[in-house]
Length: 267
Image 1 (cartoon, helix red, strand yellow):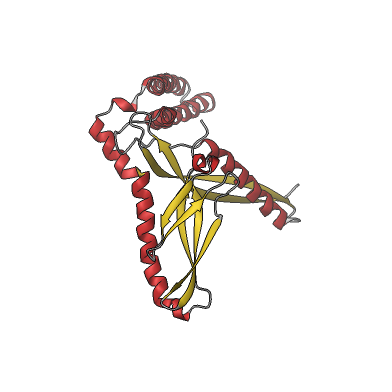
Image 2 (tube, rainbow, N blue to C red):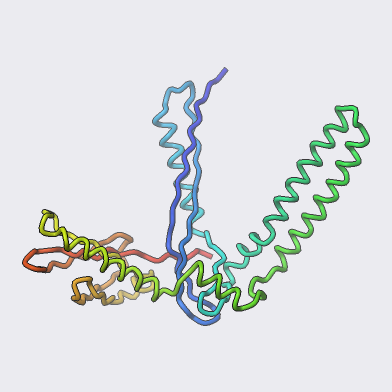
């Protein structure tokens, strides 16, 4: 008998999706999170570390594939419009409960048919199994009709806007929020900078791939009140840093502006 020790690894990733509304041209962002799972087997416990590594690699590969096309159905917080590429997700979410119910009736159908064949209930099991099978078919048809015809944009506009404002924010407000948070963090940093040997403060800023492609210049207001210009380039990557040196209250400090790239679903 072959003995396997199975390792399962789950990895999770979050990203900030940038959306340009088809209806009102507003830029808005929302956080999208997905997970990937990988399995690795160690035969006779002979390669435990290798099995774990394979499981982790498979989980990351699965997650990478998911993140390329993953999308949540989040309407525009300005006008409440669901984008075209979100409709399949919205339809799936709308029909999901029916799919679960259909799966449950299908399981009951199978169980009753087996009981009818192998126990004393006989024809009763067949009859009940047949009825649950018909219910499964009916539920499946309902789910298919919902998936094919459901249009979330027919919901009241106020309801759609409220959902968008709860789950997303305008790009401008999102970036302003980061800047305000950086100012708070810099105040804490400033209180301790005299005790620090490494006086380096990291500040996140955001750009989209269009800005990189066209090598745009981004102007940032640093938490010390200074303004700087950052020239983007097509070969920049998420996490690249731009360092600026200053002297604050007699202490030399370095402010590192860290590039964060917005992502878009590949639809």
